[in-house]
Length: 63
Image (cartoon, rainbow, N blue to C red; front, side):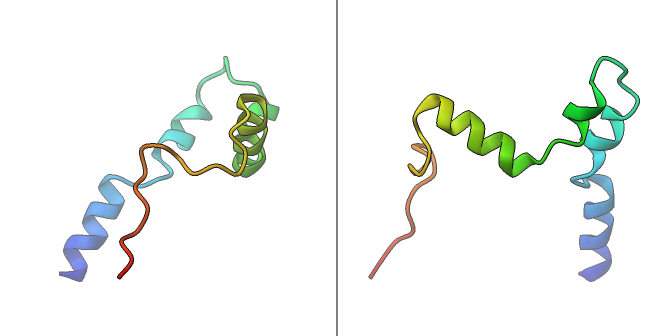
């Protein structure tokens, strides 16, 4: 099972989009190395949704 998991992670790694972004010359270096948390916080502040839960992510079930 571990070998299967490792193979799937290698096939669909989270670093794939960032590794292809290095080859894209239309993306500036500042945009490429921007902090993702900071970018999300700025977008949420502009939209007025900072601190709110995402409407499409359900809250966990409580007993």
